[in-house]
Image (cartoon, rainbow, N blue to C red):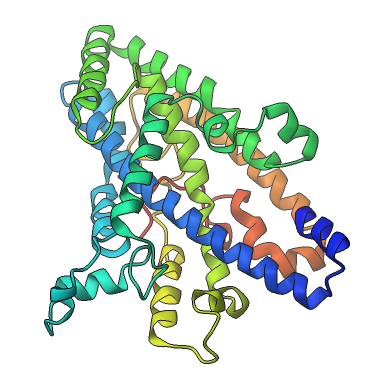
Length: 346
């Protein structure tokens, strides 16, 4: 918003022109965010599969790993089925009823009836991005933003996000310590298997060298992933969606396809699958006592931040009624149908 204001002063644009080009910028940012979002589903699938498999002989860790992993393979499958597809061959397009070609055409990110990216080129870019994340697992934000933290603080950028982000290193360390104290031998075996599993995966390289690294990367990307529930709502706004094809004057089937697919990310969520959750899949069931204590402590800390933030943004009734749909990411879990979720929502 500040950048648009400065450009407006320099060029002397009218407010309608500012709104027009701002909506274009938001459309493009929505495409970029959707690509990062899809890549997070791939990352979370690889990471949770690794921890689930590596901890099979350590029940205290595997119970937690299994909770993380539930539903994620399904979301990973949707990335390749509905979001990113290969470029269709001309001969395929001539065959009526070709199910693969229909999916290629209507894929959210790469289809001609979606955002229209080149699937082959996009895969290369996202593979490089995946490698950035897995090769430097404790510096996700620094690598993505490339802005020093002190400048973020000074500019008042990502203030609520950083509160949760700053809990993560201690959260990761204390979980690792709790599990290690439960059974040091089994912990060591599981952690070694986790490192080996990830290093042997093809298609990317890994420098994840500990359970702490794994937790940091999963928690921070989980907080980022939770914000998809609000940015996706932009595409319910006609001023944003029109940029899919700004030359046409009426809505077409491809516009409806993009609208419905991207809004699919906000139709529901799996309760309790938020970052720093202390819940299990079974009502009344608890994790190992040492692990449960850490999870309870950090869920309480995160919830305190969320309650405080909710109370603050609701003081300004006009702003909340106008923009609450996008301001509410960091409110308590379930508020406005959101939570800071790992990539398991429906």
